Length: 203
Image 1 (cartoon, rainbow, N blue to C red):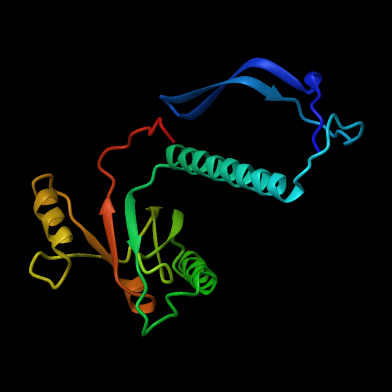
Image 2 (cartoon, rainbow, N blue to C red):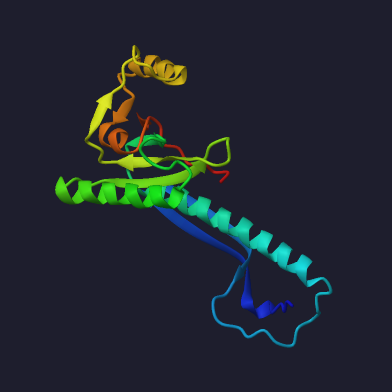
């Protein structure tokens, strides 16, 4: 059951968001909902197929939630001066690769320990992603403040993609790194410097 109330909306609204000293985002909306509480009564119509309606509503809520999350990640990325793009994988001999909640808990505790014991300020945005097998997890994200880093060498037993990056980065006097402490506790990782910070407009 849905009721529409026209006076709850303002038409043609614009918001200007400032991300950093010289980065802004202009958001324009045809309709903007005014905040506040509204009771649901005097409905205009009743839904014949409630299950279908619930399904459509849930799909729309999920789509909106994903969109808001992507926008929030973009804002965090632009509002912080991150140094590295990171890929964090899991070694099955060290941790259950399919248990993302346990992984997040242990990784969070590890980073808190570093901050507390080594007085090291670490900032990060990490996003879990499933492998192609649909079961096991890894993470991508942005980080700043890592100190426990070791340069990867092209002679190591690492993926070809990483070797190609090492060759390319050397031309720019840059390197790929291993986060040593993470490797010991969780598994393989690749830490690469952020070279160009751009605003992804279509997000």
